[in-house]
Image (cartoon, rainbow, N blue to C red; front, side, top):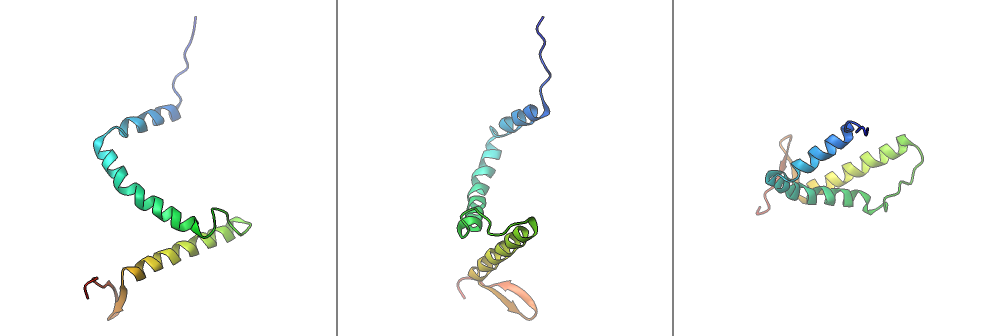
Length: 95
């Protein structure tokens, strides 16, 4: 007599993810969000070639947060971030 083992929870999750990926709405969201995420990851690793200079979790974490902050600041500057009357504003491109 041959017995079959019940599916492992990971197998069930994988099957559910694959089923969800066939939904047109999911595919549209995926197509919309993947390029910006890929671009953000590319910006993050471009200067370091995917290797960290520091040894230790604390130093690596510090570098990661500093790099992310620098990229966010560069992006905001490119979007023409200005400080007017105590508040921050994005200046429209036409002005």
